[in-house]
Length: 227
Image (tube, rainbow, N blue to C red; front, side, top):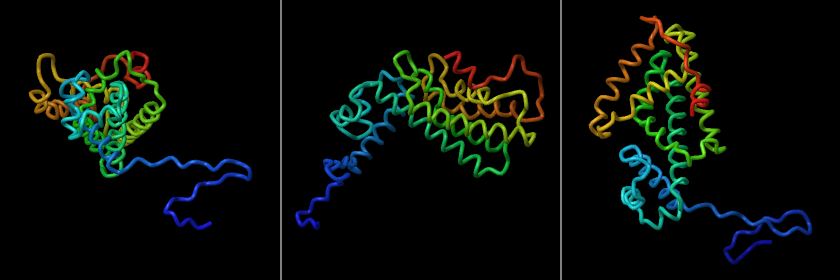
């Protein structure tokens, strides 16, 4: 039947069943506001920690407090979305580095520097005792990231460009530690040194190895057991 009142027709199931209701899609402006909130929170969590006041996050995002509370009524929900965003961005950076860099070690180095720009070290204080590290959304993104970075490391090692006595977690630990400000220093004071010190670290990963390492290569499984 053709509708003349401007309404969309309802989906109908099998005979005798009630029509299925369509779930309204979020409006474009609502999605943009949510994205701005997550981006603002990511920046402020890195700069000031997860306890930054909600109204400051809303102000930086350019929205009202009501919009922030409507999207994220509880702080753990916002932290969850920020961590999910960072993981997703890291996956994209790892995949682009693999696709666009012809030299396998250059791909590893590019990813490490771009991960530093994301301040991945800020993830650690976010993952406090009240945070659900095993939420299904996070598990999926974490597995995607592990697969992407493992691919970078395996290809560089197979090409003889990355020393053979390290594993993925050695790379990620180094990047994480080098993106966390020293005690008593602010993010802005620390930022100029991040890429400089990261390059020193990466030079130590390039093959041929110039020294022997103590202990066994650190795996991602080791990190999860220690968490």
